[in-house]
Length: 245
Image 1 (tube, helix red, strand yellow):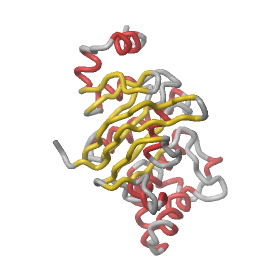
Image 2 (cartoon, rainbow, N blue to C red):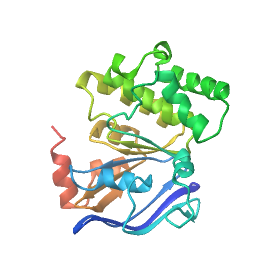
Image 3 (tube, rainbow, N blue to C red):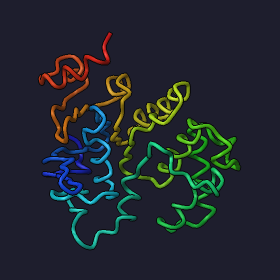
């Protein structure tokens, strides 16, 4: 067992009478790469948004190093600096350059001086292969490049955990590989990652643990070898059968 960073206890989320998440329990340890898979509408993205406090859970606890971040007095922006998120739709600021997109959060949230933030941003843009585009604006680069900038922006905040919400689903097929390669390198560097994805090869080859969600619950979880090789639940077997062949 590694050092526990996040513990999710009995988490539920409703939108009106629609119960989207039911009694979710799992733990994220330092260095974990966890892929969350399941059909559209199974609650995967809502779970990530709850963990990042973009949605408020209806009940349950989210413990960050043992402290319940749903308790009164939590500063969501400060917490999100430790638990970063990469969105499906990039969420870059269109009126800012690539570099400024990666600087602004450091200055405003982490209170870094601008030059330190700039150097830090340049380091991560270099790592994701976007250093040649620092003066470009989002409209001038491809979807795959935007997502690599979004990853650099999240990493520049020095998060302890990085959440990915279907980071390749808005991309053209030929751009998916470049983003997955960046994520593979991040996983190999020891980054703690929680990834909602439809990319089964990534889930199978890169994850330490795979979580299969169905109808708002965690139906089954285990190592990639267990989940892809010997799934225990009929729902899991049925879901995975669509990706074989």
